Length: 262
Length: 193
Image: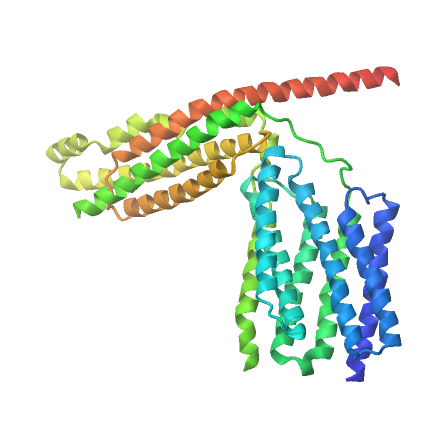
């Protein structure tokens, strides 16, 4: 058992060092204006790590106060992550004013709905509530990322390699956290040491993806693409939809007609 | 045993990972915001314009004449061959329609604002259209569908193309103007250095 704790500690040191590398690249390449959310998220994580290290030494690993501060500090980390994901959305779709206006409303509504559901279904017993809420929130992150890239694919918007790597990093971390927390929920006590290790391992994988992402060349400013006059969209889109509707009706009638003849 | 409870969550995460990887995979087409002159020209080559020949290919009088002069065996062979032609035509028509939808999406992408209701409706109708085309294609494959309504479908595609071409012409002019402005700015910079 002591061995696995030692491994968990070593992995935490490694993740701390790698996070410092991300911060180094973000600062040295002056990318704080491009990825402010990522910088905030990693900084919060580093500070959280320092705080937990101090608390483990002061109160001990199994103290209930340590657990509460650890889970409580997750709120700041989650806010940082939400900011980082919002940055990904902006960097991917922000150039297209009209589509971005639609996308951020849809994604925000989806995120709010999922977060509200996760918190509402978590219950009131502290340990279970935190764990269930965490599963729900990580699942929300995963779903928002999937929705974002489905949206981008629908409009055939190509993501740069850096943006893809960033998003994949968040997906890997959140996806594995959902599974890891779910196993903890099922097996609880005996799984705690393993949970610690399997929480850190995917995070290290994600940080490696982020290091690769922040080393990619980026356009420092999001340039808006040439926009058509507003009237073009308002004149054509209802007509396109109308023709599609009529076409579908005729095709349905063809189908119905064939059925009727049989 | 208790780990069996993990399976639904595992399946959900794997499914979402698959969807994400699929959506991250680049499309073969060029991005919509880089529509070129070639794309504009392509809108002119519409398969819908071949509809009269397709109608001729399906004309019952043709088959009656063939039966009378060449016998039922010849009619069957010609009918089979023409059905293949019509099937290819339907595929091409769907290609035309996809191309037009792509241009409609480009207009949405380059517009300063879009309406959620219109966008969602087009998305729903597009799904419906693809589903129905597939059903008709399958019926053709098994020889179960007659095809006078294919003409209606091609008419709709054709009308839609005319309207969209007008918008795209404007888009092309604006893009050319933007390039002109950019190159004139470049020239000015070169002069000052």
